[in-house]
Length: 359
Ligand code: XIL
Image (cartoon, rainbow, N blue to C red; front, side, top):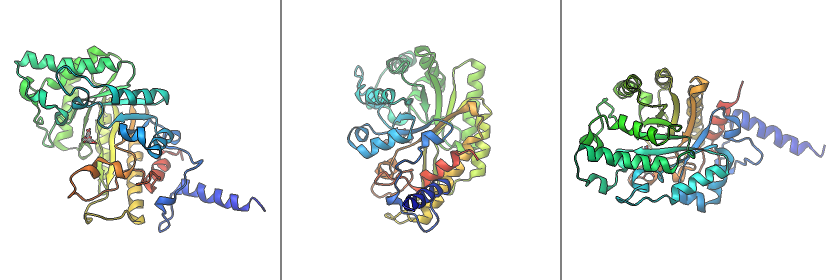
């Protein structure tokens, strides 16, 4: 009899873990995960998160969630061009090195992001003067210095990020202007020369919608294959919303998988702010609805052939640190991630766990 309270608690916790919280009873801030399984223990593919170095160093709750739940990490900003290479002959490695050391000490994979992203080009690069050859040398020097620095310590690089517009045209970029469209293939070649063992990804948003952008990316992959340009994976960013069309996602995921490349959901988060006032709470109904969509996304990912499942990376840990919430103050607050403001798991977390369980 004296074990009855523990038995009841055990049965309650197991049913919560198996089925999520019953509607109307979600106590997001009071969930206790002591002893519960983790994402990395349950999901059959690598599960990652984009990390902010300062939070990892200073916030113990944040750090504990990272250690408990994830087996892959990505620098949210520390490996971008402007962060690593802020001036012509200046490289700043300390934050990125901190992350790579952290991963090594804790048996985590590093998925590195990103060598070339138009939005992270520092001013000194845009002000650089030179002919096409000089620009190619600049591109090569940056890529090869960075790839060589992390050689053997990161599993993969997002080589080029966001090179296409939604209509399939090349996105405006200094490299496009100075070198031409082949800057993308050159970036992959340069990275491969510096580390022939590291996996090379192309990363972009909106591929889940298909259309001209996805077609342009698939055309690029076929062209690379024909020309022998090394590419090993495609990263779908997956900054998605509650109304995401799951059928469309499944269809476009299948097209991406048909390339034979590895597939990465590389920046997953799920906005719930549509039609909401500037400030609003994540109520239980909305939290559960968000969980259902996370569940459907993981299920869709599990349809990718196993050998191509590179993993899913969440773009942040707690809702408070989501980059969506650090945008302009006029933007509506959002709750796109798996953990709440005090780093407690939300229904979305339990739904992801649930989706990874074998039936
Ligand atoms: C974002 C970071 O989250 C922000 O902190 C930073 O200010 C800007 O970049 N697509 C990407 C990511 O590929 O690198 C971006 O990360 C988010 C959109």
